[in-house]
Image (cartoon, rainbow, N blue to C red; front, side, top):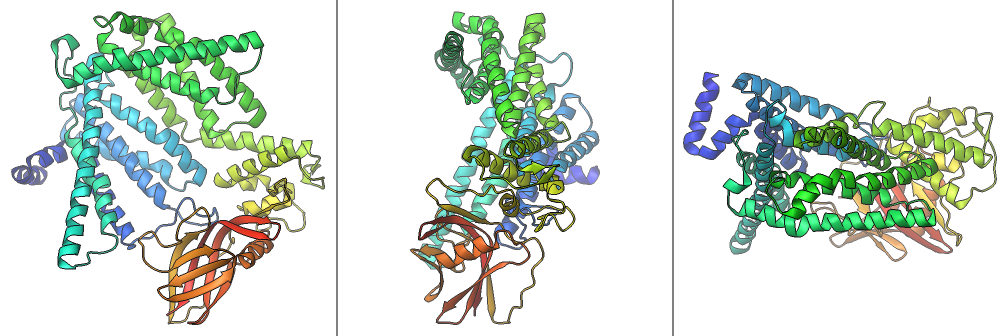
Length: 600
């Protein structure tokens, strides 16, 4: 403890504000520093982690996006723990221990995640932690609602100022680097801008934001006794913009409900997202207006008394529309989220009806935070519920098409276009979730069983081919999708070979150059795929790539290697994944991911 205080005191003499921030939020500060180090090492390619968006057969216990997501989660959770400890007046050692445990626990869901699980963590887990930060200092009896208001108002201001400071840091240093390079002809590196941006986002902005967090968590706040831009601006914003917009939106949804009753029709498919925005946005306005609920304008007081009653009809539209979509298309993470927010809003309405005095900021924000966190994992979570629902729906689709016989894949005519599209979306969702193995029993004993390696994760393209769900346009165009190979690859490289990757090219991408601007380029130039490095050029035909990919769609035993001819000798294009179209005699590459081997 003595050594820690000595270090903080020395920092205090050099950097007063920074020393106070480190003393108050040591774990988030350490996480921010760690994120800056990892990010800059990643840009410099000293570390090179695979992406969660790489093909599902890529085996790695840690993916790049998961690492950064875990760091963000640790930053938020440890910050919330420090605020909780501060409100409880725990000593420094207990605050540090609690923050370390909370930060470590918040990273756990990010390890070993699939692409779908990562998306769900971004949709539920991180927003849940953000909400937790907003109420962590007030999870105790006796806290004043207006104290929560002023804390979060200043927290929002801190985030805005931190963003501005990070932007100024970035623009200022970029200007300095550009000036030095131009005036003194010194090359500081092609990735210097990326390093500056990374440092601004991971270190400068977050640390400045931490230093701006309100220090008095129990500060009393009475709007009539305070003045300033924050108070006056909030009042004007509520009375002349936010509440009128909410009221107009209420009128629109109620008119739409009346139209449904008159025409006796079901709500449109997107009504759920409209009600979601309405419920969260309107409740946010209700929270912002809390300090003025007694002495505010007549419009504001009426809004505060009637808001939760106004939610009843829109929530009815939400649940009817959601029931229709789930009945037709099954549960997805997005629909799961709609149901979760709808349940939260319905509970608030019931609570307001039974005991309106119990509905306050802590309950509203804290309950939504808890629901989002709980929904992020486990058999009850959005991932597994969606997987079970979509798998059941795929079985129904196959049965309706007459493609299942005694629980095994049989023979059937070509699928109806709509059923085929639904089936493809389900297979891709199962692939993103890493659960294509659920389909393994359907193929047991079948020739060319895509799960012949023991029921492990198969290739989505091969499964689609076996299920006769390949995409085919009405004009006879054929969609080609090669998603790589399942096993490890050994390549014999000469000492003079240059390895470069990964590159993305096609109509959905730009130059095919690496993100740092170095190395060769890959371009689709008319009917040819051209690899260039300076004046050296290698090329192959687009037709050759698409036809080779089409032939290899159902064979994941070997990589797709295309030999390229050039004046400097032969080069190789090793393709991880490629998708495109065959339209009559035309061939189009939409997207491809590859590495190249070039002669030195």
